[in-house]
Image 1 (tube, each protein chain N blue to C red):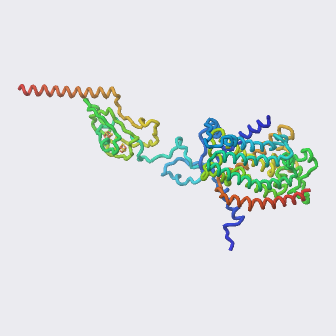
Image 2 (image 1 turned 90 degrees about the vertical axis):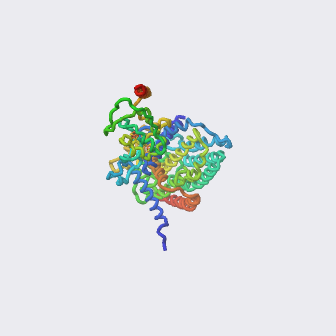
Image 3 (image 1 turned 90 degrees about the horizontal axis):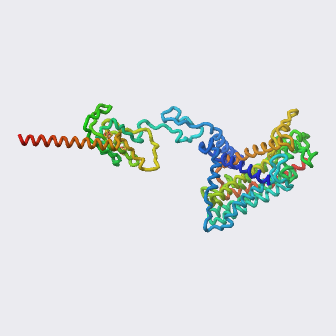
Length: 197
Length: 367
Ligand code: SF4
Ligand code: SF4
């Protein structure tokens, strides 16, 4: 019996069908995939054309609640240190200074009592577990859709969120120390007065 | 000297375009984009690559045979470039119009093999050595069917002069000194009584003048792929097995020269295929009655118009073949060594021999 996968004409036919395939792809090269989100109706329907995405110029949108770069809205932060405590890799560093006067409330009405001279998140250490965002009582620590933030110098991976300059921080510290002293002095005076009386 | 510089310049230009086209065509066939950054649509990428290569250090391996290693790229390129000397670019434009051009071309291009062996052997590298041996075996083998295919065209044309062969394949035939009274017949058969001498165009191309040459053309084209080490016959430089084959140790300027030689070889074999089989610099448009398309698109011999038309037609046909070469490369997988030799010795060579015989008989019908 004659095997129909050999023979001259079969080979010619298969060679031609190979050429047809590459040619059809070449012809459709004027079409390109559009960067659409996976929920877009078109997402699975773009069979033809170039699939390459010119990344820095175009990007497929990321999910709204994905885990990417952290952002802290420092105005809403009450410096409760919960995020630093829960972080499994200890990449959040917080210093706090008690405020001497009223420094307002956060947008959800919580009273702010502490300044944060340091609020650093080391993104190079972060494992994007998202625990810090769940524990944050004021929801000020959030994940943003930014995922491309590589740096040449690893020090730049540490993000500083504090809104105080070092001088301001120093001033707040001294104010607090002074208040403590005054309070201590007042206490001592009261004690002395009680002893006397 | 002027011809030398002009040809070199033109060749560099064509090779740059080809290197860019190769990457773009490959990308498009694989649904990629290819170079996009350097220049509009990445069109300066090939230029940038060449500039990069020229700035690189010229490394010569300590254990290499320094003389052979240094000389090889120059010899390879010189051999290929020497082939361009006899290529007619237009009716009155040929760098060196010697009467035995075809023979000269076959001979001088064979020198390429010596250069390849020098490069492979001189590198003192196992991959280079294997690549060079494969390359030499392949080129020497495929020169036989290629030579026979060329021979059949030469028999039909009765000439070894590329320019004479070119004139025969167009409406300008009678303007070549010595062929004032020659005539072309449809399919080369005089008995049919259809005189195509003044019709010209595609009807007088060698593959129409003697349809048997269509087979020769296919044989030559396949063999020429092997001779220029192109896929699917790229076992000498099979990246996945031999890194890069004979030029694995080369860097910088010498690598650029080898690269140039490889692409020049592609251009050269396509030019030869066009000249011998596809009507050379002749227009494909025939004269139809009063509508003398062939004359309109050929210009007047000896004037600038004919040179421009000639170069235009020659280059466009060459680029069609080059595109085919690229497409083949990105379509077919590489052959094994035994398949390669099987194709050469058991398929192409016997068929080419039969075609030579038939071409001789066809020639009898033409006179
Ligand atoms: S996402 Fe996880 S690892 Fe990153 S800072 Fe928050 S708790 Fe730490
Ligand atoms: S948990 Fe939220 S409110 Fe508390 S310190 Fe961290 S970011 Fe600020």
